[in-house]
Length: 129
Image 1: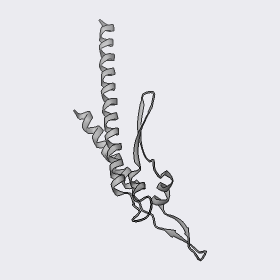
Image 2 (image 1 turned 90 degrees about the vertical axis):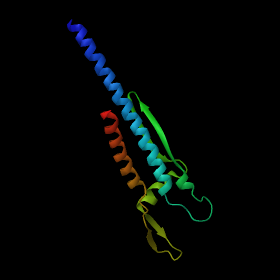
Image 3 (image 1 turned 180 degrees about the horizontal axis):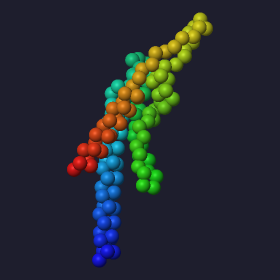
Image 4 (image 1 turned 120 degrees about the horizontal axis):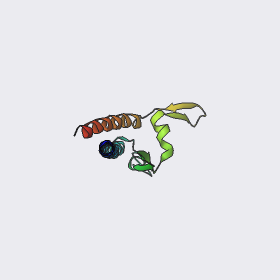
């Protein structure tokens, strides 16, 4: 009788853990895709010349899976080296040899914060069901 109860409790807990993992995975995928879409809409674009809009179009989502852990990474595939200088600004040199700073265009931080909030709300909503 006791072993039967233990087996049922283990089965119920295993099913619950699987439901929670599925809910978290779905919420993470949704949040990552929406964050990438937001970055595509709000990233800076070159107004003229070659590569017009190439940086903004380059946002992608990659799924990483290690054992039981699933994570999603939002990254810029077309110009990965531009993300930090555009987000934080950088030093520039003009034709006279003097240095100045290029203004920062914060677009990754706000999108990441919104994506984290969206993920938390989606997980809570899915677990309430």
